[in-house]
Image 1: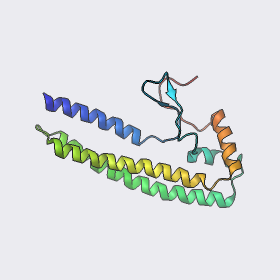
Image 2: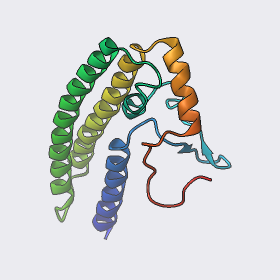
Image 3: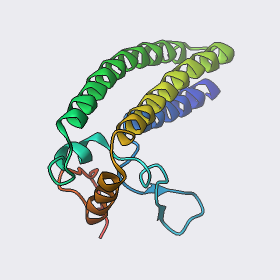
Length: 166
């Protein structure tokens, strides 16, 4: 019975972790336990998602040089994200195979979970690194324009299913 509860708990934790790892960092407010409601994401206020920049490149006066540099950064990041996605899938499959056993070796399962979490950390690190490199290519004026555009809500922003903010 304890093994089944552990397996179910681990699967739920893993599914939640994978969902978070695959979400972009910048869009939307984040929930903070004990807070009255969603709190603003401190990352969102200081970095810009690539789709916001690309959808507003004319409005912010992105130069050809900036476009070329940002495209290069995005292509490089896409390759890295694909590698990390494959690695994450491999690590998750290994963890699931350990958890499927009738008697789960807790030490091995937790060690494998650490490997999954390490890859998830790399995904987040790569996301932040990309957005920092892109931000550093923008002028202060362009950054101010993006903050204003983001404050109005940009058309390409896809909100998750469920209740939408008013």
